[in-house]
Amino acid sequence: MSGSPRTRVIRVDPDRPDPSALDEAAEILTRKGLVAFATETVYGLGAIATEPDAVARIFAAKGRPAINPLIVHVAGIDQARVCVSGWPDEASVLASRFWPGPLTMVLPRSTLIPDVVTAGRSTVGLRCPAEKVALGLIERCGRPLAAPSANRSNRISPTRAEHVLADLDGRVDLILDSGPTALGLESTVLDLSGASPHLLRPGPIAIAEIEAALGGSRVTALSAGAAAERPLSPGQLAIHYAPRTPAYRIDSTGELAGLPASLDPLALILVGPAEAPDTDRARACFVLESPATASRRLYDVLHHCDAMQPAGIVVVMPPDRPEWLAVRDRLIRATRPLADRGTTDDLFK
Ligand code: AMP
Ligand code: MG
Image (cartoon, rainbow, N blue to C red; front, side, top):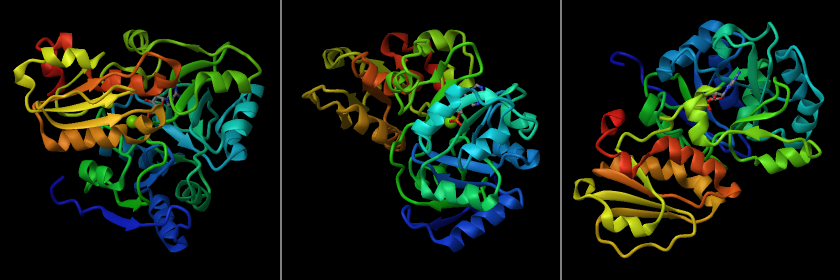
């Protein structure tokens, strides 16, 4: 935005954040400004959730469609309970087990939460983040913070302050830079407003862990493809979290030999326990072997590949197994099957 003042960046120690930096950030938020800060998942773009004007600025800064609800970040269970009109036993159990941490629970909202936050829905997504910077900010504001990922809509989520600055410079008042995020992938989103728990977005907390905490209750879930066809939640849309470079997925390194020359020079990302192929076609090749490494580094690697401006990004997918669910979900939304090339290139423009 021409004429906008540039965004300020303040470095803070993630383990012992400087109280004066947090005070300053809280003051900006209280004046209805926007502050980007790290959570353990990705960087969030925060505004005070109970101030509709401030929340509207998040949508403007991100270019986020008004139909996409925001996650509300709370300092703990007490603050969560005032945001909802009902707090079922399952919420109690899951909050005690997984908060602070990367689990978002969707529950019927109270009148405290304005329409703009929930995109007019009768439910609100709530989570208590684990990071000291995030918790310190919420506590200082004394009110919950609405905070989606701090990126332009449909772009790759930021796991470093540099990613936020590259995408949102001039559109946010302050970035608190506390280094790379610990987990690197967005929270697990679980809908508890229906008859039984339903997974809306896979994430760092696995379905099996939720089922175990709930004493064996079944959590329902749709595959990424099925969810994209009938999304219950905007995070399930097919094109989401996507790089700007045309990005394609294949299932094995064996398919590399058949890649068209039009994708050269390409950036290659091998996800899962695959051996790096012997190819001179890749300008860069990244190997993300385990689910934990892939979660932590995937967005950073995608940002990096995009910045290199190759003709194409090609991802070799990890196996379709439960431990890879969240990473596969994001990759499916960030890429197209190679077979669809040509018919869908325009979607990336
Ligand atoms: P982001 O904040 O960018 O990580 O995206 C948050 C995602 O959480 C949204 O895109 C939705 O998919 C989901 N979400 C948040 N609140 C709700 C809600 N009230 N109902 C359903 N899904 C929600
Ligand atoms: Mg997002």
